Image 1 (cartoon, rainbow, N blue to C red):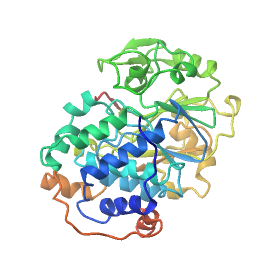
Image 2 (spheres, rainbow, N blue to C red):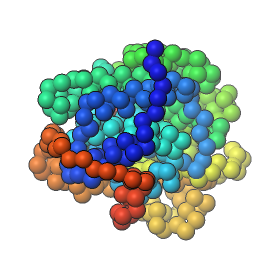
Image 3 (cartoon, one colour):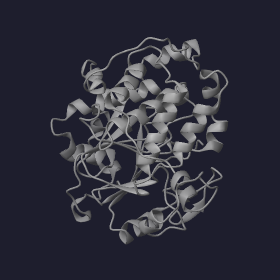
Image 4 (cartoon, rainbow, N blue to C red):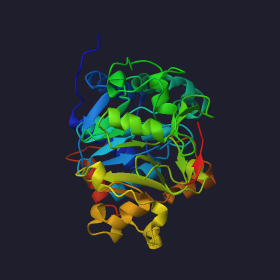
Length: 389
């Protein structure tokens, strides 16, 4: 039986220093990763399969080891604890810095447990990470040892499967399941295991919306389903929801809105795999003070405000209540996709082909106060669908 305990704040801030103050970021020692994972597992035992969260909150999609782009997210959206974050999974694989990315997120979750929330994606899996980069990266960075991969993939079994925001919005990594009509069916699942190939748990992390169908259809991914308008309408009606937010699909513009905002995809890995050229976004939710009658059903394509497509975060003094941006982005009132480009530091990594960091030195760095927020206070704020595993 695991015994819950807490890591001192000063130790967590020391971990943040190692990751943030060095280029390339320092990898944490295996014994540190083991302690972080053990501590977080004991805390996640008490967390339900579907977390109950409140706005305001920023929702982040797939990151896939693109560490520098994760730092961009904190620069444009604000650093914890000043901003609440819900991450929708797929933290590792494909990018050069999966180890550093998941290490930072674990540390932030422990440092700010009521501000940072993590759910599970289809890549939070032993099978997937063995084949798509994370396992090999760990071997390269830890002198051939797979211990860190084992610690982190064991932790993945403890991550929640979804969240509700203000009791009106359901967030998950992928989509809906023909085996699940009620949120209570998700709450009753035994999540503390590897993601199975089929069933509700698999469908939550693998499924995708499809505007060409009304019901369910087998997914071309080989796992999960495609789901249509009738499916999401019934699911929202039966569970007193107004919207589903998910990630899982590459979007050229960084986001996709389906069915006038009934379902939103947020994608947070710009220039995916350092070659796709796509934008990325963070979905900011300030409030949910609306109902179905208050939300316009006018099509996005009916708008004459084409310039709204190019609007950025800075263009709005009161951006969340702008009817123009709601119409153009296909979001509900109180929501805004904050769109960003890839970090310039990715270019250097791509040119040098970095995939392995250097060996940590023996330096010690003392840490005091809220190091993470102070790090970012010093920084300046800077509907195409693809099926990827």
